[in-house]
Length: 94
Image 1 (cartoon, one colour):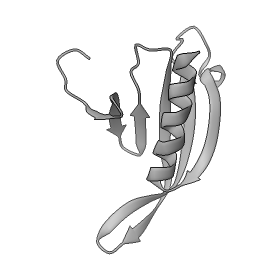
Image 2 (tube, rainbow, N blue to C red):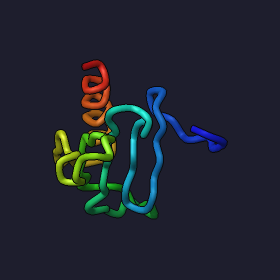
Image 3 (spheres, rainbow, N blue to C red):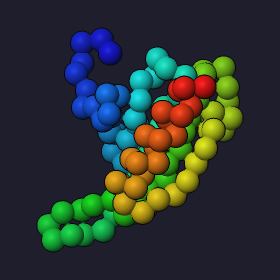
């Protein structure tokens, strides 16, 4: 991470761009991509409802489709973050 300071979760960078959230360091072997598929209203707030979670390899030699190691659909951002953090931790230990 050069000059920018990122929000972190469990010690790893968390970066959002539109409806996509990347969790992890791109310099490591894997990262997690969470795509917010649908949202719902809760009062004045728009919150994530259905989230697609993918564990991705950062190997630039692989085709984008081949970079997907695992994927799952979760309801709620908390559930998506929880499974993403577990997958990333396990993958980086191997």
